[in-house]
Image (cartoon, rainbow, N blue to C red; front, top):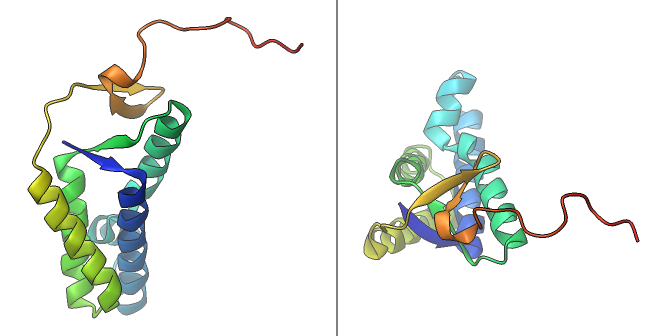
Length: 134
C-alpha cells in the first residue's frame, strides 16, 4: 500500500480511461476482460476515496499493491495498442514514482465501504446525531 495524492489519482484515472478506450477500439474482448486489462473498474473506487478524503481534509489516499498492478497492466496494454505517447509517459512516471515511494505501513480502515487510512477517521461520531436545520 502507498499513499497517493489527488493529483496522482487524476493522472492515474487519465491512464486507465485511455487504456479502456484504446483496448475497446482495437479489440473485440468481452467487458470483464476489458475492465481487467484497462484497470477501468478501479476508477469509481478512486473517486470515492478522493471524495471521502477531501471531505475529511486529507491530502492523500491509499492505493493497494494490486491496484498499482492494474496501472502496470494498463500501461503494458497501452504499449501493445499504440496508446497516446503522452499518456504512456504519465503512466510510466506514475509507476516510477510509486516504486520509489515504497510501500507504507499505515493501518487501513473501511468506512462506508471506502478504504481510508485508519488515523484519518475518528472511531466515534462527532457532532449531533441529526443535522440541524436552523
